[in-house]
Image (cartoon, rainbow, N blue to C red; front, side, top):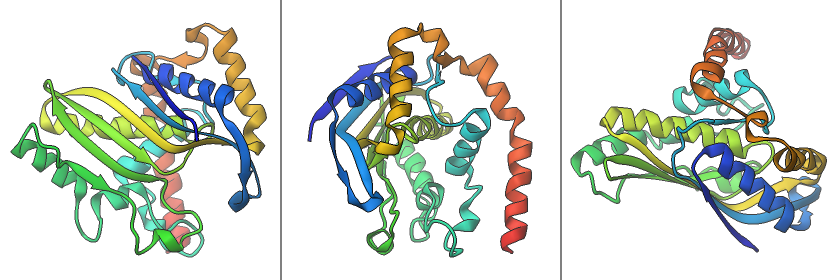
Length: 256
């Protein structure tokens, strides 16, 4: 497998570099689990200043509501109630983070970093070997680690598998929001964000979408393929919260 490393200032910058590298250097091979081909590399992308603007790429599936809902899923656990209902997933990242066999890993990370600012022990494990080996769709996120260096909180994430076109931007954005939440609790700044995907891939069904994204990256100025978050996109995201909560409440009523 090809190893790719990209680095830059903002999240959209490194995300765009990552999908461009996948497009140009990825190997095409079969993916029998999903009955199609895929283009694949191993990818590490690093955003040196993940809160720097422009913070939002336009090149992902969804809009402001979908991004806001995903952030709420990861940080607030708005869909944790659907775990194990027979028609959905067997996990959420939020549940694995705050209720890993009854242990709140986020609380541990905050307390551990308060205990020792130079610790290397602020780790959260997402994979659950009691569940994931027997799940047709096991957790993609495996591991998160946080460091305070230079009075900033740095986050490093490991994915076993990451859908470059349909998921990776939203994954990274939400994980950076978690990073910021923890940094705020520690009263430190937000440092670099490192996103490692052992399999960074695009399924055959999305090859044309990937081509469209690449055309945008190559032919359009950065302001036409990104959004400012503060003062613009964030406002639309926050306006969607009430609607998201109402939809979640209806889901709860249907599954009660």
